[in-house]
Image 1 (cartoon, one colour):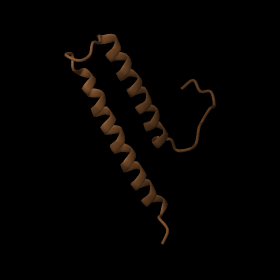
Image 2 (tube, helix red, strand yellow; image 1 turned 135 degrees about the horizontal axis):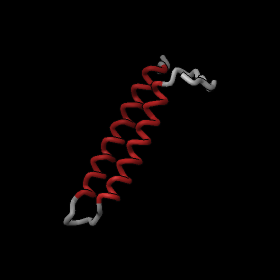
Image 3 (cartoon, rainbow, N blue to C red; image 1 turned 180 degrees about the horizontal axis):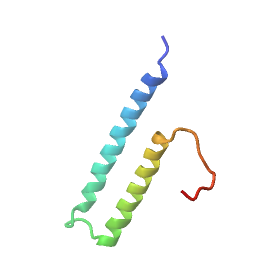
Image 4 (cartoon, rainbow, N blue to C red; image 1 turned 45 degrees about the vertical axis):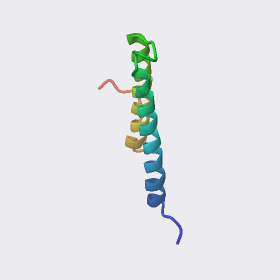
Length: 74
């Protein structure tokens, strides 16, 4: 029996989420001041980029597929 779309989603989404979590944990290793040098601006840039990409990804999941591009004042 072939894999359903939902089963495929679960398999792939779980694997990709775990990869992202692992990479975030690796990124946190860069916080070691004994090994690396960085300033608040560097950290702000990193987390701004991550937050922006996460917001974009979340938006794609919440998008109903219908885009209302009409101008509105309210």
